[in-house]
Length: 165
Image 1 (tube, one colour):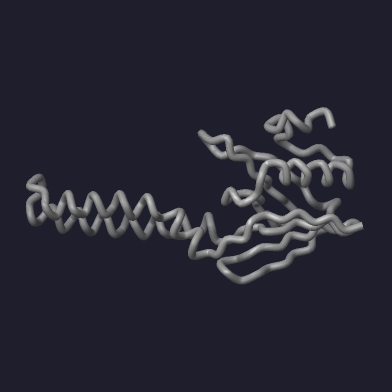
Image 2: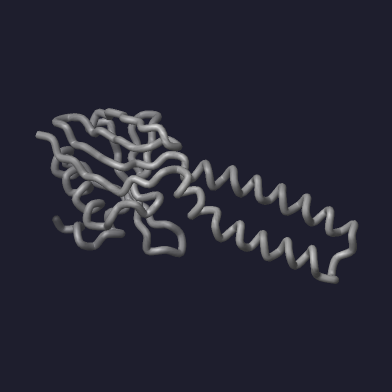
């Protein structure tokens, strides 16, 4: 029996723009503050610009790493756990043995946002790392996983609705 759960499919460029929007805004304000302000000398402005460009590229690297891969669909097919999604903008499809798979519910720091980590041997995926799944779907995925494997899900206490189910 096949059961499928879907999240929202958002292209890489939209994810990147949403993630970098606030950073570009802050850097733009700082740029104009340094350029037209009287606080910095000409020499210190150059160093500040170099520092800003380096910080931007370091931030760009880490943000791209975080949003590069997104899971858009999860399927339970008999004894398989199929993960479908986007790596940058290329589609990927990975089939995992459900008995070798472990699920863990985590919560983003200082946030109410929950996400699921899927581990299987040397592979791992994140569901809802970009807030593209609703909470009810995440709960349904966990219930189906528990029903098919009869295994515990780590971090289940973060979702009180399903502790006793």
